[in-house]
Image 1: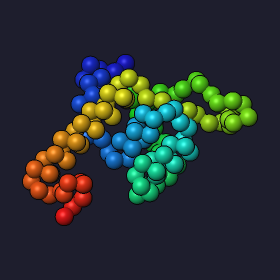
Image 2 (image 1 turned 180 degrees about the vertical axis):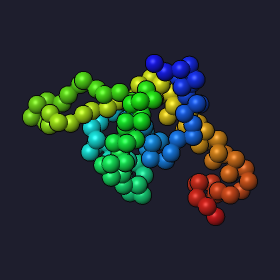
Image 3 (image 1 turned 120 degrees about the horizontal axis):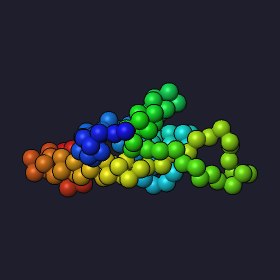
Image 4 (image 1 turned 90 degrees about the vertical axis):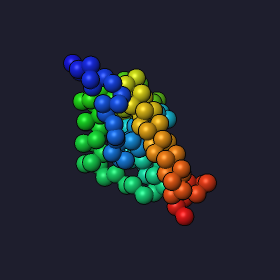
Length: 124
């Protein structure tokens, strides 16, 4: 059972970049491990390539923290591999990824106010 502190989205922040990307990928749709690794690579513009070991360590921690849960939904049998485990965000996971996005947006605004970023978010 989780303590009330761990059910507060801010208690999970800041997130590691890989964890943030995993949660973002799951915010789009339920996915299995290999699809998640591909989504993380795509969301990062190819900059982050999660190997199987680190991906499943992140997933286990997200499961333990109640941010992600295994899904019982399965695709059609001809499009599925029974060994795959599918994951989805919990309500807390959705709140945490949203809180992290707000935290990061606030940091971008501070960076812009200090004229560290141009209008398009790129460094000068």
